[in-house]
Amino acid sequence: MRPLIRTARCWLLRARVRAMATLPTAPPATAISFTTRPLYTPSSRSHRRLLARFFSVAPASAGARGLRAAASAVEVGGVKIAREVDVVKEDDLTNNVPDTIFSKIGLQLHRRDNHPLGILKNTIYNYFDKNFTGQFDKFDDLCPLVSVKQNFDDVLVPSDHVSRSYNDTYYVDGQTVLRCHTSAHQAELLRDGHTHFLVTGDVYRRDSIDSTHYPVFHQMEGFRVFSPDEWSGSGMDGTAYAAAELKKILEGLARHLFGAVDMRWVDTYFPFTNPSFELEIYFQDDWLEVLGCGVTEQEILKRNGRRDHVAWAFGLGLERLAMVLFDIPDIRLFWSNDKRFTSQFSQGKLGVKFKPFSKFPPCYKDMSFWINDAFTENNLCEVVRGIAGDLVEEVKLIDNFTNKKGMTSHCYRIAYRSMERSLTDEEINNLQLNVREAVKDKLKVELR
Ligand code: PHE
Image 1 (cartoon, protein in one colour):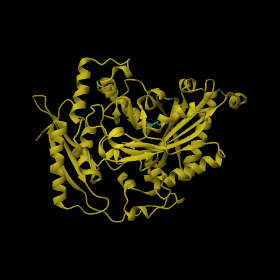
Image 2: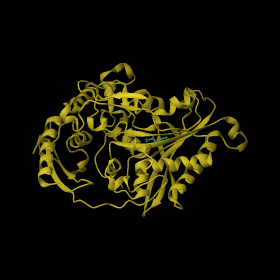
Image 3: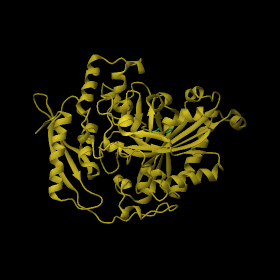
Image 4: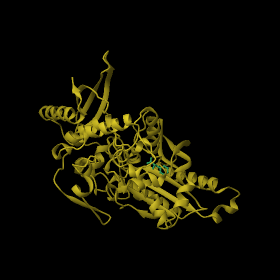
């Protein structure tokens, strides 16, 4: 079963599986600027393919890049972020950030106390305040623009890991990304001397489109360092001690959020923790993955001033939990300013069930084309979102074949649906026409 929402496992494990299946796994940063990643030397074939993939979608013209093309700037945590200078660089081939993404920076849904994500964040804060009286430092305003080093190197993501690829991550340029997880802040906070912290923030990942996937979502990271005297009398080694506390704390958190639920621990892999686990809870007849966590790799502690210490870390996806807790059926709703959505939630009230104000019918349109080597589904989804914005609910491959000449055809079914109103036939036909044009133009595929 496909996990409900991207979380730790589905990103990193999917990434690993794909890394095995496809050759060009290096990021554009590597392809463009070898100085940043000297270890990686792509074969000329994979290098060419990478660049081809690159050129097939970027640079994009302002109009096609998205819905909010007007120049603007936003501020996050005292850092001013200007659209052209810092995020959307239309002439820079190492940039793959469209306006639809820029338009989300600075909105910080997790900082709205009456928003499901803010309510959830505050409930988790309360749990930690209760159990660790004031020990956890909280950050929810750190700038989402981070270096490739912060996002990947500092948390030991291998240089050829596919999560670094242009297909999965938004690059502002060869050295800067929109963070794809809140783990990007672990190292700097450790270096600043923090030993207990929670980091909440918007994170960005290129992905396919459906009701539980959106290229911007929100995570909370927890991190806690132990000094040797904390475990020395326990009869356990530091790692076992940290793992035991981690599990106890997170089981308590799950009960704080969901009440008395069945839970289970599943072993998994993350580059930055060892051992690594996922917590699953039994919810509506199914095991639901709630978070990823583990005991921090020694190397991270050593590099950041905490040699001889141990630590645990966890990362959870707020949308995933909020969809379940508040019965929110579509991830796009979190971004809605419609009063019929926003007025249903209020500060401190976790788990008030969302009442859909009305159900609008979806409209399906199919499109078929011959793909090329550079084609990826994430690129297709970006183009579709660039035209249809949040009116696109799902993009799904429904047919796929290769003919005798070796040409591969894909047929995608696009579901259009507004969360807020009925769409007219004319509007949808127009959208579909524009989507077809843009797909042909940007992805250089041959429409059938
Ligand atoms: N950063 C991981 C992700 O986004 C989640 C995680 C955080 C896992 C901390 C372990 C420890 O996929």
